Amino acid sequence: MAPLETNPPAGTAVPAGGRRPLRAFTAWRRRRPFWGGALLLLGGAEILLTEQASISVVLQAGAGGIAAYLLPLVMAVCGLLVLLNPGQRLFYSVIGVLVTLGTWVTSNLGGFFVGLLLGVIGSSLAFGWLPDQEPRRWRRRAPRGTA
Image 1 (cartoon, one colour):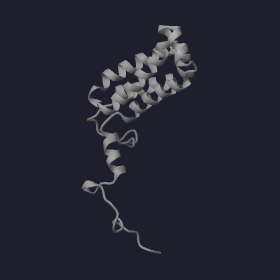
Image 2 (image 1 turned 135 degrees about the vertical axis):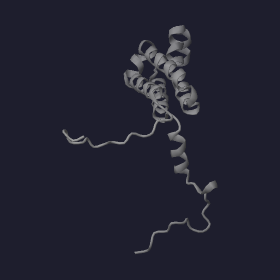
Image 3 (image 1 turned 90 degrees about the horizontal axis):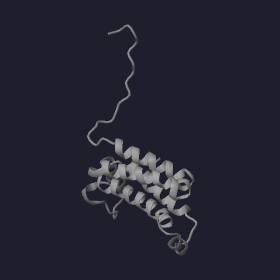
């Protein structure tokens, strides 16, 4: 068996600072409510993709038809903003959940419940994310009767 190489082969480009792209992405992801923003973005995209009417029919339908496209678009934008600007995550998550609940009426029951659930769960995760909290460590419970 050949020994495992710890250094990249000669001629391979190493990112600046010696960090691998996956580690850089992981570090970026841990500094923001990634899963909340991603789920909110996916919920908005899912509702947009389940819309059946063409834009000419929507314009003839009026404000209700435009809202069917506008609300999921706002959901997707809120998901992106949660990812890119985590300092304002509370505002974006509240707007995201309100808009998501509005899609229940305007967009095929919130994208047939899938987009609605993704949006509500994503907004809740973004709202509840705490940036400075240490990861929880599971502790064993001490047997009863011992102090």
